[in-house]
Image 1 (cartoon, rainbow, N blue to C red):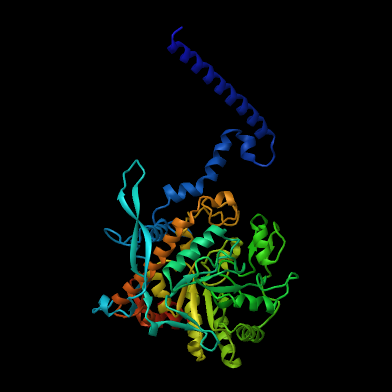
Image 2 (cartoon, rainbow, N blue to C red):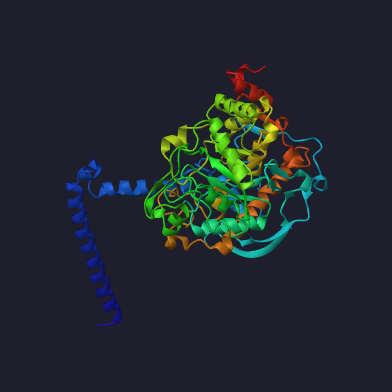
Length: 536
Protein backbone atom coordinates (compact mmCIF):
# COMPACT_ATOMS: atom_id res chain seq x y z
CA UNK A 1 0.00 0.00 0.00
CA UNK A 2 1.51 3.32 -1.04
CA UNK A 3 1.63 6.39 1.17
CA UNK A 4 -1.14 8.16 -0.74
CA UNK A 5 -3.59 5.39 0.06
CA UNK A 6 -2.56 5.45 3.70
CA UNK A 7 -3.26 9.21 3.92
CA UNK A 8 -6.61 8.68 2.20
CA UNK A 9 -7.67 6.03 4.72
CA UNK A 10 -6.44 8.12 7.68
CA UNK A 11 -8.27 11.16 6.34
CA UNK A 12 -11.48 9.20 5.88
CA UNK A 13 -11.29 7.79 9.43
CA UNK A 14 -10.61 11.23 10.92
CA UNK A 15 -13.48 12.83 9.02
CA UNK A 16 -15.81 10.01 10.06
CA UNK A 17 -14.85 10.42 13.72
CA UNK A 18 -15.34 14.21 13.55
CA UNK A 19 -18.74 13.80 11.93
CA UNK A 20 -19.79 11.22 14.54
CA UNK A 21 -18.64 13.52 17.37
CA UNK A 22 -20.54 16.45 15.89
CA UNK A 23 -23.62 14.24 15.47
CA UNK A 24 -23.47 13.03 19.07
CA UNK A 25 -22.92 16.57 20.41
CA UNK A 26 -25.75 17.86 18.20
CA UNK A 27 -28.18 15.18 19.44
CA UNK A 28 -27.17 15.91 23.04
CA UNK A 29 -27.72 19.67 22.63
CA UNK A 30 -30.99 18.98 20.82
CA UNK A 31 -32.24 17.12 23.86
CA UNK A 32 -30.98 19.80 26.24
CA UNK A 33 -32.56 22.60 24.23
CA UNK A 34 -35.96 20.85 24.01
CA UNK A 35 -36.07 20.21 27.76
CA UNK A 36 -34.74 23.53 29.11
CA UNK A 37 -37.34 26.04 30.32
CA UNK A 38 -35.47 29.36 30.13
CA UNK A 39 -35.38 30.17 26.38
CA UNK A 40 -38.51 29.69 24.22
CA UNK A 41 -36.47 30.18 21.05
CA UNK A 42 -34.37 27.10 21.91
CA UNK A 43 -37.40 24.95 22.77
CA UNK A 44 -39.02 25.78 19.41
CA UNK A 45 -35.88 25.90 17.29
CA UNK A 46 -33.23 23.75 18.99
CA UNK A 47 -29.66 24.08 17.74
CA UNK A 48 -30.58 26.78 15.18
CA UNK A 49 -31.64 29.02 18.05
CA UNK A 50 -28.07 28.84 19.36
CA UNK A 51 -26.93 30.71 16.28
CA UNK A 52 -29.17 33.58 17.30
CA UNK A 53 -27.62 33.79 20.79
CA UNK A 54 -24.10 33.54 19.35
CA UNK A 55 -24.73 36.45 16.99
CA UNK A 56 -26.28 38.43 19.83
CA UNK A 57 -23.21 37.88 22.02
CA UNK A 58 -20.79 39.14 19.38
CA UNK A 59 -23.11 41.96 18.27
CA UNK A 60 -21.21 44.76 20.10
CA UNK A 61 -17.95 43.75 18.44
CA UNK A 62 -19.60 43.49 15.00
CA UNK A 63 -21.15 46.93 15.36
CA UNK A 64 -17.94 48.48 16.68
CA UNK A 65 -15.69 47.18 13.92
CA UNK A 66 -17.97 46.53 10.95
CA UNK A 67 -21.40 48.14 11.00
CA UNK A 68 -21.22 51.47 12.92
CA UNK A 69 -19.93 54.28 10.74
CA UNK A 70 -17.01 56.41 11.90
CA UNK A 71 -19.16 58.81 13.91
CA UNK A 72 -21.87 56.52 15.34
CA UNK A 73 -20.28 54.48 18.13
CA UNK A 74 -21.01 55.15 21.81
CA UNK A 75 -19.64 56.21 24.24
CA UNK A 76 -16.83 57.10 21.80
CA UNK A 77 -17.13 56.88 18.04
CA UNK A 78 -14.43 55.31 15.89
CA UNK A 79 -13.27 58.83 14.97
CA UNK A 80 -13.02 59.82 18.63
CA UNK A 81 -11.18 56.65 19.55
CA UNK A 82 -8.70 56.87 16.68
CA UNK A 83 -8.06 60.54 17.42
CA UNK A 84 -6.88 59.59 20.90
CA UNK A 85 -4.89 56.56 19.74
CA UNK A 86 -3.05 58.45 16.99
CA UNK A 87 -2.09 61.26 19.33
CA UNK A 88 -0.83 58.77 21.88
CA UNK A 89 0.87 56.28 19.59
CA UNK A 90 2.29 58.44 16.82
CA UNK A 91 2.34 61.84 18.58
CA UNK A 92 0.69 63.04 15.41
CA UNK A 93 -2.70 64.67 15.02
CA UNK A 94 -3.12 65.70 11.38
CA UNK A 95 -5.96 64.54 9.14
CA UNK A 96 -6.32 64.43 5.40
CA UNK A 97 -8.95 65.51 2.89
CA UNK A 98 -11.36 67.19 5.30
CA UNK A 99 -13.46 67.01 8.43
CA UNK A 100 -16.03 64.25 8.95
CA UNK A 101 -18.10 66.44 11.23
CA UNK A 102 -21.73 66.87 10.18
CA UNK A 103 -21.86 70.63 9.65
CA UNK A 104 -25.64 70.54 9.16
CA UNK A 105 -26.15 69.65 12.83
CA UNK A 106 -26.26 72.36 15.51
CA UNK A 107 -23.09 72.78 17.56
CA UNK A 108 -20.43 75.01 19.06
CA UNK A 109 -17.63 76.62 17.05
CA UNK A 110 -14.49 78.52 18.04
CA UNK A 111 -14.25 82.01 16.59
CA UNK A 112 -11.15 82.47 14.51
CA UNK A 113 -9.28 85.77 14.36
CA UNK A 114 -8.40 87.62 11.17
CA UNK A 115 -4.98 88.11 12.72
CA UNK A 116 -3.99 84.95 14.61
CA UNK A 117 -0.98 84.85 16.91
CA UNK A 118 2.34 83.68 15.57
CA UNK A 119 4.03 80.79 17.36
CA UNK A 120 6.68 83.11 18.79
CA UNK A 121 3.95 85.35 20.23
CA UNK A 122 2.43 82.59 22.38
CA UNK A 123 3.01 82.83 26.13
CA UNK A 124 4.36 79.33 26.50
CA UNK A 125 7.09 77.76 28.61
CA UNK A 126 9.67 77.02 25.93
CA UNK A 127 12.37 75.73 28.27
CA UNK A 128 10.65 72.65 29.70
CA UNK A 129 10.95 69.69 27.35
CA UNK A 130 10.43 65.96 27.49
CA UNK A 131 11.86 63.04 25.58
CA UNK A 132 9.27 60.38 24.78
CA UNK A 133 9.02 57.43 22.44
CA UNK A 134 6.59 57.41 19.54
CA UNK A 135 5.88 55.05 16.67
CA UNK A 136 6.90 55.85 13.13
CA UNK A 137 4.69 54.18 10.52
CA UNK A 138 6.94 52.66 7.86
CA UNK A 139 4.42 50.66 5.84
CA UNK A 140 0.74 49.70 6.17
CA UNK A 141 -0.04 46.82 3.77
CA UNK A 142 -3.65 45.69 3.36
CA UNK A 143 -3.27 42.03 4.31
CA UNK A 144 -0.22 42.06 6.59
CA UNK A 145 0.86 43.56 9.88
CA UNK A 146 1.77 47.24 9.58
CA UNK A 147 5.47 47.96 9.84
CA UNK A 148 6.34 50.40 12.64
CA UNK A 149 9.30 51.27 14.79
CA UNK A 150 9.73 53.17 18.02
CA UNK A 151 11.67 56.40 17.81
CA UNK A 152 12.76 58.86 20.49
CA UNK A 153 11.22 62.31 20.20
CA UNK A 154 12.11 65.44 22.17
CA UNK A 155 9.64 68.30 22.23
CA UNK A 156 8.36 71.11 24.43
CA UNK A 157 5.64 69.95 26.80
CA UNK A 158 3.51 73.05 26.12
CA UNK A 159 3.11 74.36 29.64
CA UNK A 160 1.92 77.82 30.62
CA UNK A 161 4.45 80.48 31.49
CA UNK A 162 4.97 81.10 35.19
CA UNK A 163 2.92 84.31 35.20
CA UNK A 164 0.07 82.45 33.47
CA UNK A 165 0.15 79.49 35.90
CA UNK A 166 -3.09 78.72 37.71
CA UNK A 167 -2.99 78.87 41.50
CA UNK A 168 -5.42 76.68 43.44
CA UNK A 169 -6.08 77.48 47.08
CA UNK A 170 -4.22 80.74 47.53
CA UNK A 171 -5.56 81.02 51.09
CA UNK A 172 -4.17 77.59 52.01
CA UNK A 173 -0.74 77.25 53.63
CA UNK A 174 0.45 75.21 50.65
CA UNK A 175 -1.24 76.42 47.43
CA UNK A 176 -1.18 74.19 44.37
CA UNK A 177 0.46 75.79 41.31
CA UNK A 178 -0.55 74.27 37.98
CA UNK A 179 1.16 75.01 34.64
CA UNK A 180 -0.83 72.59 32.51
CA UNK A 181 -4.61 72.94 32.18
CA UNK A 182 -5.28 69.24 31.58
CA UNK A 183 -5.13 66.53 34.26
CA UNK A 184 -6.32 63.01 34.94
CA UNK A 185 -9.79 62.61 36.34
CA UNK A 186 -10.61 60.37 39.30
CA UNK A 187 -9.81 56.72 38.61
CA UNK A 188 -9.36 54.46 41.62
CA UNK A 189 -6.93 51.65 42.10
CA UNK A 190 -9.34 48.73 42.14
CA UNK A 191 -11.46 50.10 39.36
CA UNK A 192 -8.23 50.09 37.34
CA UNK A 193 -5.46 47.57 37.91
CA UNK A 194 -2.02 48.37 39.25
CA UNK A 195 -0.39 48.21 35.83
CA UNK A 196 -2.79 50.76 34.33
CA UNK A 197 -2.40 53.10 37.31
CA UNK A 198 1.40 52.78 37.14
CA UNK A 199 1.55 53.45 33.40
CA UNK A 200 -0.69 56.50 33.80
CA UNK A 201 1.35 57.84 36.72
CA UNK A 202 4.66 57.43 34.92
CA UNK A 203 3.30 58.87 31.67
CA UNK A 204 1.85 61.93 33.38
CA UNK A 205 5.12 62.39 35.23
CA UNK A 206 7.02 62.39 31.93
CA UNK A 207 4.68 65.04 30.47
CA UNK A 208 5.10 67.26 33.57
CA UNK A 209 2.89 70.08 34.82
CA UNK A 210 -0.22 68.00 35.44
CA UNK A 211 -2.02 66.11 38.19
CA UNK A 212 -3.53 62.71 38.86
CA UNK A 213 -6.78 62.32 40.80
CA UNK A 214 -6.75 59.13 42.87
CA UNK A 215 -10.47 58.50 42.76
CA UNK A 216 -12.24 57.59 45.98
CA UNK A 217 -10.27 54.35 46.41
CA UNK A 218 -7.38 56.02 48.24
CA UNK A 219 -3.71 56.48 47.44
CA UNK A 220 -1.82 53.40 46.31
CA UNK A 221 1.91 52.97 45.71
CA UNK A 222 1.08 52.83 42.00
CA UNK A 223 -0.30 56.37 41.98
CA UNK A 224 3.05 57.55 43.32
CA UNK A 225 5.27 55.67 40.84
CA UNK A 226 5.67 58.57 38.41
CA UNK A 227 6.18 61.36 40.92
CA UNK A 228 3.20 63.23 39.43
CA UNK A 229 1.21 65.71 41.53
CA UNK A 230 -1.74 64.08 43.27
CA UNK A 231 -5.24 65.28 44.10
CA UNK A 232 -6.55 62.81 46.66
CA UNK A 233 -10.26 62.26 46.37
CA UNK A 234 -12.29 61.43 49.46
CA UNK A 235 -15.63 59.74 48.83
CA UNK A 236 -18.46 58.88 51.23
CA UNK A 237 -16.74 55.55 51.96
CA UNK A 238 -13.77 57.51 53.40
CA UNK A 239 -11.27 55.05 51.93
CA UNK A 240 -7.75 55.95 52.98
CA UNK A 241 -8.86 58.42 55.67
CA UNK A 242 -10.83 56.17 58.03
CA UNK A 243 -10.29 53.81 60.88
CA UNK A 244 -11.06 50.10 60.79
CA UNK A 245 -14.62 50.78 61.94
CA UNK A 246 -15.23 53.08 58.99
CA UNK A 247 -15.18 56.39 60.88
CA UNK A 248 -13.40 59.45 59.52
CA UNK A 249 -9.86 59.72 60.91
CA UNK A 250 -8.12 63.09 61.12
CA UNK A 251 -4.86 61.31 61.87
CA UNK A 252 -5.14 59.26 58.68
CA UNK A 253 -5.93 62.44 56.72
CA UNK A 254 -2.82 64.13 58.09
CA UNK A 255 -0.74 61.09 57.21
CA UNK A 256 -1.96 61.27 53.62
CA UNK A 257 -1.34 65.02 53.41
CA UNK A 258 2.28 64.47 54.47
CA UNK A 259 2.93 62.55 51.23
CA UNK A 260 4.95 65.03 49.19
CA UNK A 261 3.10 64.30 45.92
CA UNK A 262 -0.29 65.14 47.46
CA UNK A 263 -1.07 68.74 46.51
CA UNK A 264 -4.81 68.95 47.21
CA UNK A 265 -7.87 67.06 48.41
CA UNK A 266 -11.28 66.69 46.78
CA UNK A 267 -14.54 65.78 48.49
CA UNK A 268 -16.64 63.74 46.10
CA UNK A 269 -20.33 64.58 46.50
CA UNK A 270 -21.31 63.00 43.18
CA UNK A 271 -19.99 61.71 39.87
CA UNK A 272 -21.54 62.33 36.46
CA UNK A 273 -22.19 58.69 35.62
CA UNK A 274 -23.42 57.83 39.11
CA UNK A 275 -24.80 60.42 41.48
CA UNK A 276 -24.37 57.95 44.30
CA UNK A 277 -21.62 56.27 46.23
CA UNK A 278 -19.10 54.14 44.36
CA UNK A 279 -19.28 50.39 43.81
CA UNK A 280 -16.61 47.76 43.25
CA UNK A 281 -17.36 44.08 42.72
CA UNK A 282 -15.99 41.45 45.10
CA UNK A 283 -13.64 39.85 42.59
CA UNK A 284 -11.82 43.16 42.21
CA UNK A 285 -11.26 43.61 45.95
CA UNK A 286 -7.85 42.01 46.35
CA UNK A 287 -6.10 41.86 49.69
CA UNK A 288 -3.96 44.85 48.73
CA UNK A 289 -6.98 46.93 47.76
CA UNK A 290 -8.75 45.88 50.95
CA UNK A 291 -5.72 47.01 52.98
CA UNK A 292 -5.62 50.42 51.27
CA UNK A 293 -9.37 50.93 51.70
CA UNK A 294 -9.54 49.30 55.13
CA UNK A 295 -12.28 46.85 54.15
CA UNK A 296 -12.64 43.07 53.93
CA UNK A 297 -11.04 41.44 50.88
CA UNK A 298 -13.12 39.72 48.18
CA UNK A 299 -16.35 41.35 49.30
CA UNK A 300 -18.25 43.92 47.23
CA UNK A 301 -17.86 47.52 48.34
CA UNK A 302 -20.68 50.03 48.18
CA UNK A 303 -20.10 53.55 49.43
CA UNK A 304 -23.01 55.50 50.93
CA UNK A 305 -24.57 57.90 48.46
CA UNK A 306 -23.59 60.83 50.68
CA UNK A 307 -21.31 61.66 53.60
CA UNK A 308 -22.50 61.15 57.14
CA UNK A 309 -20.19 63.95 58.32
CA UNK A 310 -22.39 66.73 56.86
CA UNK A 311 -25.92 67.10 55.53
CA UNK A 312 -26.19 70.63 54.11
CA UNK A 313 -24.03 73.35 52.60
CA UNK A 314 -23.06 75.13 55.84
CA UNK A 315 -21.94 71.88 57.51
CA UNK A 316 -20.15 70.85 54.28
CA UNK A 317 -18.26 74.14 54.23
CA UNK A 318 -17.30 73.76 57.88
CA UNK A 319 -15.89 70.33 57.07
CA UNK A 320 -13.95 71.74 54.11
CA UNK A 321 -12.50 74.47 56.31
CA UNK A 322 -11.33 71.90 58.85
CA UNK A 323 -9.65 69.80 56.16
CA UNK A 324 -7.84 72.85 54.76
CA UNK A 325 -6.70 73.94 58.21
CA UNK A 326 -5.70 70.42 59.27
CA UNK A 327 -3.66 69.65 56.15
CA UNK A 328 -2.61 73.11 54.99
CA UNK A 329 -3.53 72.11 51.45
CA UNK A 330 -6.32 73.19 49.06
CA UNK A 331 -9.64 71.45 49.34
CA UNK A 332 -12.22 71.09 46.58
CA UNK A 333 -15.54 69.42 45.96
CA UNK A 334 -16.77 67.32 43.04
CA UNK A 335 -20.38 67.91 42.07
CA UNK A 336 -22.98 67.04 39.48
CA UNK A 337 -25.32 69.93 38.68
CA UNK A 338 -28.98 69.21 38.10
CA UNK A 339 -30.47 72.69 37.73
CA UNK A 340 -29.84 76.43 37.74
CA UNK A 341 -31.41 76.58 41.20
CA UNK A 342 -28.84 74.14 42.58
CA UNK A 343 -25.92 76.16 41.18
CA UNK A 344 -27.42 79.38 42.49
CA UNK A 345 -27.92 77.89 45.95
CA UNK A 346 -24.29 76.75 46.07
CA UNK A 347 -22.88 80.14 45.06
CA UNK A 348 -25.19 81.99 47.44
CA UNK A 349 -24.08 79.82 50.38
CA UNK A 350 -20.41 80.51 49.59
CA UNK A 351 -21.16 84.24 49.61
CA UNK A 352 -23.22 84.23 52.79
CA UNK A 353 -20.97 81.98 54.88
CA UNK A 354 -17.65 83.35 53.66
CA UNK A 355 -16.50 79.75 53.49
CA UNK A 356 -16.28 77.16 50.76
CA UNK A 357 -13.99 75.14 48.53
CA UNK A 358 -10.80 76.23 46.77
CA UNK A 359 -12.02 74.52 43.62
CA UNK A 360 -15.18 72.92 42.28
CA UNK A 361 -14.98 69.96 39.91
CA UNK A 362 -18.09 69.99 37.74
CA UNK A 363 -18.68 66.52 36.32
CA UNK A 364 -21.07 66.17 33.41
CA UNK A 365 -23.65 63.42 33.14
CA UNK A 366 -21.83 62.02 30.10
CA UNK A 367 -18.84 61.09 32.27
CA UNK A 368 -17.66 57.50 32.60
CA UNK A 369 -17.50 55.00 35.44
CA UNK A 370 -16.20 51.59 36.28
CA UNK A 371 -19.66 50.49 37.45
CA UNK A 372 -23.01 52.26 37.64
CA UNK A 373 -26.71 51.73 37.11
CA UNK A 374 -28.19 52.39 33.68
CA UNK A 375 -30.84 54.82 34.92
CA UNK A 376 -28.26 56.91 36.78
CA UNK A 377 -25.75 56.97 33.92
CA UNK A 378 -28.40 57.90 31.34
CA UNK A 379 -30.72 60.35 33.04
CA UNK A 380 -29.41 61.91 36.27
CA UNK A 381 -27.39 65.12 36.13
CA UNK A 382 -26.81 67.61 33.32
CA UNK A 383 -24.11 67.17 30.67
CA UNK A 384 -21.04 69.36 31.05
CA UNK A 385 -21.93 72.00 28.45
CA UNK A 386 -25.16 72.71 30.32
CA UNK A 387 -23.83 72.36 33.87
CA UNK A 388 -20.61 74.33 33.48
CA UNK A 389 -22.14 77.68 32.47
CA UNK A 390 -24.73 77.38 35.25
CA UNK A 391 -21.99 77.13 37.87
CA UNK A 392 -19.84 79.85 36.31
CA UNK A 393 -22.82 82.22 36.02
CA UNK A 394 -23.94 81.62 39.60
CA UNK A 395 -20.47 82.21 41.05
CA UNK A 396 -20.14 85.43 39.06
CA UNK A 397 -23.59 86.54 40.10
CA UNK A 398 -22.64 86.39 43.80
CA UNK A 399 -19.14 87.76 43.30
CA UNK A 400 -17.26 84.66 44.44
CA UNK A 401 -15.90 83.40 41.11
CA UNK A 402 -12.42 84.84 41.65
CA UNK A 403 -12.06 83.02 44.97
CA UNK A 404 -12.07 79.53 43.49
CA UNK A 405 -11.22 77.55 40.40
CA UNK A 406 -13.47 75.35 38.27
CA UNK A 407 -12.36 71.98 36.89
CA UNK A 408 -14.60 70.61 34.14
CA UNK A 409 -15.03 66.93 33.37
CA UNK A 410 -17.10 64.97 30.85
CA UNK A 411 -15.75 63.62 27.52
CA UNK A 412 -13.29 66.51 27.11
CA UNK A 413 -10.82 64.36 25.22
CA UNK A 414 -9.77 66.72 22.39
CA UNK A 415 -8.30 70.25 22.27
CA UNK A 416 -11.42 71.80 20.72
CA UNK A 417 -13.69 70.32 23.39
CA UNK A 418 -11.29 71.57 26.05
CA UNK A 419 -11.15 75.08 24.54
CA UNK A 420 -14.96 75.28 24.52
CA UNK A 421 -15.06 74.19 28.18
CA UNK A 422 -12.48 76.84 29.11
CA UNK A 423 -14.54 79.49 27.31
CA UNK A 424 -17.63 78.31 29.17
CA UNK A 425 -15.99 79.04 32.50
CA UNK A 426 -13.56 76.25 33.37
CA UNK A 427 -10.02 76.99 34.50
CA UNK A 428 -8.87 73.38 34.17
CA UNK A 429 -10.19 70.11 32.74
CA UNK A 430 -10.11 66.46 33.76
CA UNK A 431 -9.84 63.52 31.36
CA UNK A 432 -10.44 59.88 32.34
CA UNK A 433 -11.43 57.60 29.46
CA UNK A 434 -9.08 59.37 27.05
CA UNK A 435 -6.20 58.39 29.29
CA UNK A 436 -7.58 54.86 29.62
CA UNK A 437 -7.44 54.53 25.85
CA UNK A 438 -3.77 55.58 25.88
CA UNK A 439 -2.92 52.55 28.02
CA UNK A 440 -4.86 50.11 25.86
CA UNK A 441 -8.63 50.42 26.47
CA UNK A 442 -10.60 49.20 23.43
CA UNK A 443 -14.10 50.05 24.74
CA UNK A 444 -14.97 46.43 25.45
CA UNK A 445 -17.50 47.76 28.01
CA UNK A 446 -16.45 45.17 30.59
CA UNK A 447 -15.18 47.60 33.27
CA UNK A 448 -17.64 46.31 35.87
CA UNK A 449 -16.84 42.63 35.35
CA UNK A 450 -13.10 42.39 36.15
CA UNK A 451 -12.69 40.75 32.75
CA UNK A 452 -11.25 43.68 30.79
CA UNK A 453 -9.54 41.91 27.86
CA UNK A 454 -6.65 44.40 27.68
CA UNK A 455 -5.79 44.45 31.38
CA UNK A 456 -6.84 48.06 32.09
CA UNK A 457 -10.03 47.93 34.18
CA UNK A 458 -9.20 44.70 35.99
CA UNK A 459 -7.20 43.42 38.93
CA UNK A 460 -6.85 39.96 37.36
CA UNK A 461 -3.08 39.35 37.13
CA UNK A 462 -3.44 37.11 34.08
CA UNK A 463 -5.31 39.75 32.11
CA UNK A 464 -2.92 42.46 33.24
CA UNK A 465 -0.06 40.62 31.58
CA UNK A 466 -1.21 42.16 28.31
CA UNK A 467 -0.48 45.70 29.54
CA UNK A 468 3.20 46.62 29.18
CA UNK A 469 3.93 49.63 31.36
CA UNK A 470 7.22 50.46 29.63
CA UNK A 471 5.33 50.95 26.33
CA UNK A 472 2.04 52.46 27.48
CA UNK A 473 3.57 55.21 29.62
CA UNK A 474 4.94 56.89 26.48
CA UNK A 475 1.48 56.89 24.93
CA UNK A 476 0.03 58.64 27.96
CA UNK A 477 2.77 61.29 27.85
CA UNK A 478 2.41 61.80 24.09
CA UNK A 479 -1.35 62.19 24.30
CA UNK A 480 -1.18 64.81 27.05
CA UNK A 481 1.59 66.78 25.33
CA UNK A 482 -0.34 66.78 22.06
CA UNK A 483 -3.54 67.89 23.78
CA UNK A 484 -1.74 70.88 25.27
CA UNK A 485 -0.08 71.61 21.92
CA UNK A 486 -3.49 71.60 20.22
CA UNK A 487 -4.88 73.91 22.88
CA UNK A 488 -2.16 76.47 22.20
CA UNK A 489 -2.80 76.05 18.47
CA UNK A 490 -6.49 76.86 18.95
CA UNK A 491 -5.65 79.85 21.15
CA UNK A 492 -3.39 81.21 18.39
CA UNK A 493 -6.17 80.73 15.80
CA UNK A 494 -8.52 82.72 18.04
CA UNK A 495 -5.99 85.54 18.33
CA UNK A 496 -4.99 84.68 21.91
CA UNK A 497 -1.47 84.29 23.25
CA UNK A 498 -2.56 81.78 25.90
CA UNK A 499 -5.38 79.24 26.29
CA UNK A 500 -6.05 80.76 29.73
CA UNK A 501 -7.67 83.68 27.89
CA UNK A 502 -10.54 81.82 26.25
CA UNK A 503 -13.78 83.57 27.22
CA UNK A 504 -17.42 83.43 26.20
CA UNK A 505 -16.83 85.81 23.28
CA UNK A 506 -14.64 83.21 21.57
CA UNK A 507 -17.41 80.62 21.18
CA UNK A 508 -20.33 80.72 18.77
CA UNK A 509 -23.33 78.37 18.72
CA UNK A 510 -24.90 77.50 15.38
CA UNK A 511 -28.47 76.15 15.50
CA UNK A 512 -30.19 73.73 13.11
CA UNK A 513 -31.48 76.65 11.02
CA UNK A 514 -28.00 78.03 10.40
CA UNK A 515 -28.38 80.95 12.79
CA UNK A 516 -25.52 81.85 15.15
CA UNK A 517 -25.62 82.92 18.77
CA UNK A 518 -23.00 84.11 21.21
CA UNK A 519 -22.49 82.24 24.45
CA UNK A 520 -23.82 85.25 26.33
CA UNK A 521 -27.14 84.91 24.51
CA UNK A 522 -27.16 81.17 25.12
CA UNK A 523 -26.52 81.71 28.83
CA UNK A 524 -29.41 84.13 29.11
CA UNK A 525 -31.66 81.55 27.50
CA UNK A 526 -30.46 78.97 30.02
CA UNK A 527 -31.13 81.20 33.00
CA UNK A 528 -34.46 82.47 31.74
CA UNK A 529 -37.12 79.86 30.80
CA UNK A 530 -37.45 80.44 27.06
CA UNK A 531 -36.35 78.63 23.94
CA UNK A 532 -33.44 79.51 21.71
CA UNK A 533 -35.98 80.52 19.05
CA UNK A 534 -37.09 83.39 21.32
CA UNK A 535 -33.66 85.03 21.45
CA UNK A 536 -33.57 88.31 19.57
